[in-house]
Amino acid sequence: MQPSRVFIVGSGVVGTATGTGLLAAGNTVTFIDISVPRVRHLQAQGLDARTELDLSSEPDSFIFLTLPTPNVGWRYDLGAFTAGTAAVGRALAGSSAQHTVVVRSTVSPGTTEGLVRPVLEENSGMTAGEGFRLASNPEFLRAVSAAEDFSHPWMTVIASRDPQAVARLRGLLEPFGGEMRTFSDPAEAEFIKCAHNIFNATKISFWNEMWLIAQKIGLDLDPIAATVAKSAEGSINPQYGIRGGAPYGGVCLPKDTCGFLGYSDAIGVDMPLLQAVVETNNRLESVVKQEVEAAGKAASGIPTA
Ligand SMILES: NC(=O)c1ccc[n+]([C@@H]2O[C@H](COP(=O)([O-])OP(=O)(O)OC[C@H]3O[C@@H](n4cnc5c(N)ncnc54)[C@H](O)[C@@H]3O)[C@@H](O)[C@H]2O)c1
Image 1 (cartoon, rainbow, N blue to C red):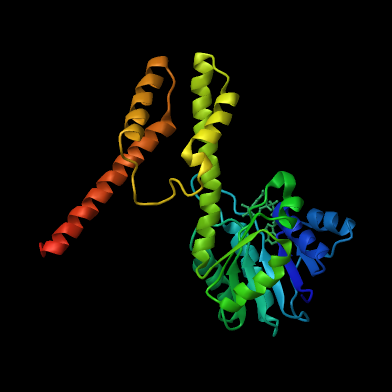
Image 2 (image 1 turned 30 degrees about the vertical axis):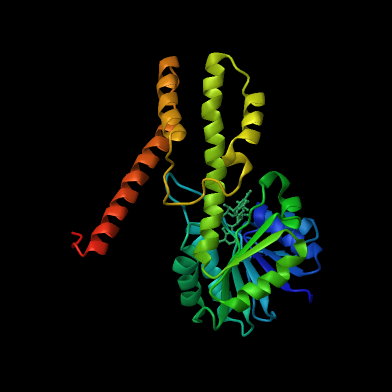
């Protein structure tokens, strides 16, 4: 594989791990960051770091957007992300090479096509798929082991409407190993990354809620949780419980979720997550019921409101 030209836009935790990993693999990497102290810090390590992206005399390249996407209350603040993307668009305008812009920041589904694409097109005067390529490639690394996780990924997800962009990124990232999954819609990759993080967060909150119960009744949660990790089908079978549109049913799950809510109430521990589990299931049951009724009416020719 020929070495590639790579730019990292936003050289913090993810950008630095991505750039140094690609550099160690033999690629030519330049780090871009608006923070002068950050750029000086990277330069002091012998890295090519700059405050501005200049593509005027550069060959075809990969431009990774590893910009921050913090939340403000219940929404993402995409101010810095949008500003950094606009700067990439302006740099594209001064280049005749074919660049592949890769969204590696964590963003909500639809951001690559609904925000990044128009911002790049407006600022470059080019069209995605013609003047430049656009892809999503979310990062799964953990901050505590960022460099190691980048170099040994367990999963790489690439998505683009442009098969050439997928092929180019596959060529760049395949040497790092791990499982690779590709998609044709960037929203799929964005959804995977968000679901990945929310799933992890939900699991942690679930066990913290159980920990509060264990504390209340004087049990040590660790051996209990370690045993459930080996007994619950949701723990041992990765496919279990991830089929959307199908509420749980049968005897045990409805009975034990509701029954345990009464038990926790009796011992004085709130279980808001378990309450939400029951409410979500009730909601799904009525959605499915309405769908079945509508399908039945459609099949019998009765108009549906
Ligand atoms: N930290 C993690 O463990 C982790 C893991 C996976 C994904 N992510 C995601 O990756 C993205 C980056 O996260 P991070 O932790 O590396 O953030 P970070 O804050 O460590 O780094 C972001 C960098 O971008 C720079 N920056 C801000 N505006 C800029 C601009 N306009 N142009 C150039 N540089 C600019 C900042 O100065 C900073 O150095 C986020 O979307 C985050 O959710 C983070």
